[in-house]
Image (cartoon, rainbow, N blue to C red):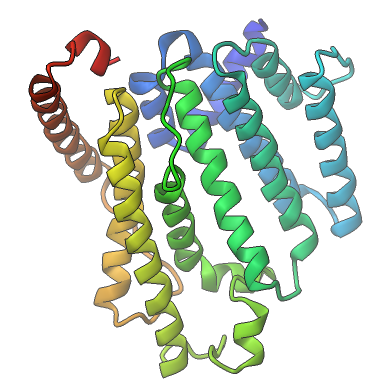
Length: 307
């Protein structure tokens, strides 16, 4: 494994998202910590190249075809040369795959599919089916990624609501960034809704726009509730905590949207980092207590249920 890629991955992750860096530091399986930084940093780089470095759609498409080809070759066990330093992050990540490699494959392929979709949809309306696929695919990628890096090799239960929490987070994320994304050319309202005149992209205080936002908030709330019910049944305490932290980031935003009467803002302020981490610490203590009580009631060995 390349020490150079480990150093680069840590630097990118720490600079881009301190929250992701700290979460990986304290919650990810120690043996996979460096790989978690590699995963985050590789996709951060890909997203930045697509958004900022490429000049027009043809260049974005060529870049993403190279990345898709690279992923396929690496997953087939090939060792391509002439890699950019950031592509070496992905190469080391895949070469080091261990227990539950199907989760890593899902994480990588689905995340890349999401970014590839973004490269060709700029400036055009997308259908309800496409946006539903977008949210579900990202939800699967995030969930499978967490369950690969936290409690690797554990037999996580499958369920119709396994990906609900992460899907809800993405629905909320799209609401948060909807007006900013519009300026960048990404239309995150289904074309069918726009054709029927239900939403006015220029007036988010219009009743139809508010009604559509309200429906999306309700769906996200429902999915968060179902997703956290799935998290509550997990044996791996660290995965449960990470999942709840992930939900909390976006549930607070839903509350803000509700308080605003479902009128979307241009920009949403971020909570002070100190308050955020204090809140997360309190949530972790609460979850540990619930987890221990549940294990005692079930007469489960805590050494297993708190992996």
